Length: 382
Image 1 (tube, helix red, strand yellow):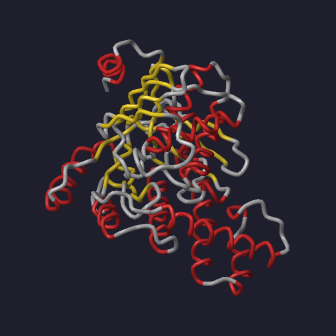
Image 2 (cartoon, one colour; image 1 turned 180 degrees about the vertical axis):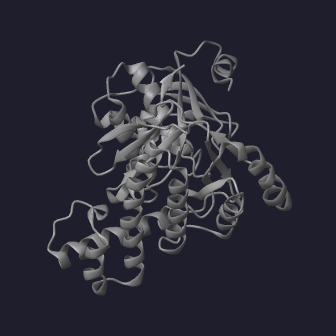
C-alpha cells in the first residue's frame, strides 16, 4: 500500500505517523466472544493502514482510498449514513474523549486490502488502526488490550453493532507465528505457538457473497443467547458468569423453559466453547486430523444451531472437504456470506486453490479470493 505516499500527494507534506492494523481469521470459537467464551484467532497479512497528521482546529480531512472519497468537516456527534466509513474513526475519537483525551482533528489517508464484508474484520482493523494512530499522535499510553476495548466500545456505542471483543483484540494483540487464545469473559489471553511443522497450511477463501449478517440479525442472536443464560441461571439456581460457562447438562434441565431458537443458540455456544479447548490441545499436539474434525463440527453447529451459514458457504466448505489433502473447513466471521477457514496439508495448498478457482469461482464468474495465510503481528507503527 502507498498510504504515506498518497498522503504527501494529497496534503503536500509527510504524515506525522503511518500505522497498520491487521484483519483476522478465527480458527475456531465463532459467535461466542460475546457469550464469554474462548476464541482462537490469528492476525492475517491483510490490513488497514492510516497515514495521518494531527490538526488543532477541530477539522478533519479524511481520504478513503477504497471508497475514493474525501470527508471534510468536523467530528460528527452521531452515526451518519453519509461517508459511513467515517463512523468507525469518529467512534474511536469519541471514546478517547470519554477518557479525557481530547483530539483536535486530523488529516488522514486510509487504505486497506481487507475485502469489505468478508468476515475478516475490516471494521475492527479500522478502529484499531485509528486508535493506534491517535494514541501515537497524542502520546497516550493505553495498553494493547485497552486499545482493543476502546475499539469495541466505538462499535457498540457509535456504530451500533453489539460486537464482542475478539476482532479488536487480535488486531491489537496479534503476534507473528501465534494464535491468540482469549478468554472473552475475563480478557485473560495467551499466545499459542502456531507450529504447522511444514505439514499443514491455513487457507482462507471468500464464498463470493458479501457478508450479510445485519446489525439487527446479529443483535437478535445475541439477545437470544442472553435470554437463554437468564433461563439457565433461574432453572439451575447457578449464578453463571456467562453462557459459555454453562454445560449441556445445564441446558438439558432448562430447555423446557426456552423456545427452540433459544435452545439451539445456547447449544452452539456451549459446544463451541468445548471445541475451542480441544482445538488448542490438538494444535499443541500437532494433531491436524483432530483439528480438522473440530473445524467441521464448528461449521455444522453454525449452520444448524446458529443459522448463520448460507448455500455458498456450505458448498465451498464441502468442496474443500472433498479434497484428500483437507483436514477440515468452516465459515469464519459473522456468517451469511464472507469467508471460510480451512486446515489443509501443505502439499495440497496449490491443488486445492486451483480446484476452487476452476470448480467454484469460474462457474460463478467470480474473481477468486483465496489465499494461504500465516499469523502476523498486530497493530504497529510503520
